[in-house]
Length: 447
Image 1 (tube, rainbow, N blue to C red):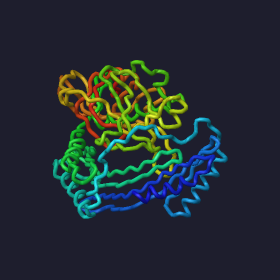
Image 2: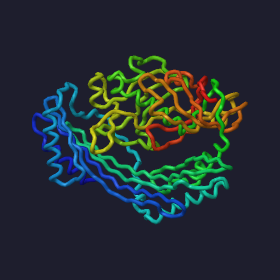
Image 3: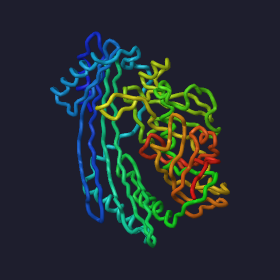
Image 4: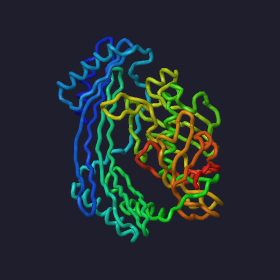
């Protein structure tokens, strides 16, 4: 960690009087294991490191990166960034951030003991998961894959304007994908467990989820078209919330690519909807002490009791909008410049379990998976039409499985028609936490 800071300081110290320099340096160590049919199908362990350098001069920005921390490569990247800035378009809003006085929170995101677990332990865990899924139900005829993975990552960002941050985290997971068979029919389902070290992983949960999700869809039929109350399972809800989060980006608003543009302080959702982005929550896998520009992370309320409260901003978009940054800069790694986006969206949970929510529905469907999101959801207009599968709800009870149907609405209408949120909050590796969401009056198109 100290080495990364020292390298960043050397880069930034070379800033000329008429330029700003940012150095973003990252290191990570990753393990990936896949087992199949009681044997290792793939095992890889890798380390990577690199640096991204931004130079701002005369209201122009240049960027270059190197996939190594060799001094000669860093020197070349700095030279390239300076050259690239000369050819860039002038923009009065360009410029690196400056300290804003917000103190970073002490988040426990790094588990040192992850490095102490042997490769043999990790392989054994994946094999145990495969066996647990296989034994969970006689209808499970094959395990498509059982996996273990982890990553240890450290990053430092330093600017000539005074921002300085180093942050680190660990992450581990297990997952399995099962194939269930009944007669000539087959169905698939997946399960997983995530944590920051092996001790936080729940093998039985991952195995049970994979088995249940595969077997409960056996015998599924295509439903009749109708208008129903829909419960989105937490794993589906996280996808919906991530889409909504992308439209709450200040950058999207400035570009006219958000369905929430010009709606600040308006009622955009039902009263039960309070949505925050809180990367200071250590339970979130998007949590971080700092954002990708070096600002201390903080909570941002986006929607409060259905009222649109604000948007997410990084340095550039906040300057264009004339507001303060919400410390919402993200980046894909050292090879990219920062952008703006949600990191840890949380829809405030209600007080009822999923089963209690189901018991209050006369005619509906529990949607356990959706498909065609990229082509069927328009985050600008809000149009929403995706394929789905799930379980019928009749008189407050789970009924037969159904598949090959389409659910259609708009994001705007769905937000207004949310009548309840479950208490089954589930933190998963996404920009949003999962929770059951009940939406009335959705069009379901089937047979």
